[in-house]
Length: 203
Image 1 (cartoon, rainbow, N blue to C red):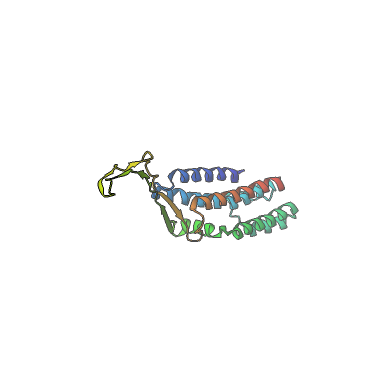
Image 2: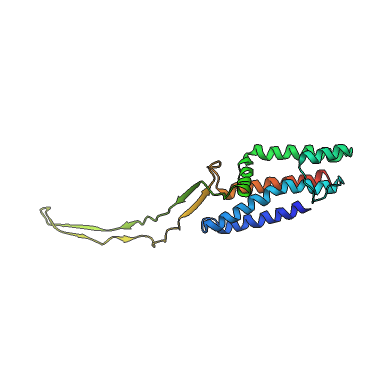
């Protein structure tokens, strides 16, 4: 199915995002926009896949949305196609209700209005604390007066370790507790499950 090919494209863009994350902000943004556009398109392409599979006579050169799909299915008395579009709408709404609506909106911004960028950047810095030890010797005479003090120079008890490099995380303001990669992974997994359910339920 064409929707499965689009999913593979989404996986490719997500992999590129993982490689670029925290490194190349500008190229990461290109991959992010491509990911959002491609992943959202799976929902629409699924309609075309099943319009063909359920023999509604709608080819990919015609405009198709859920209303046209349902109208055509009812006109042909195609009960399986009617069940499919009812299921499709329910699953699409579930994706939105799982708090992925902001990602769907960002796809629309990327297509029609301009660039999509993270709103929040969090930087985690690491430092290394080094423990040292020294010896102090105090020499006193028989009357208890200090006649000499010796202090050994402090020596580190551990080999110095290079601190970890700073970690940079990017977030959308709608998801302040999950970085962009984690949100996109969850979004892709939900869309993938929808495609798998469609294949299982309407094959």
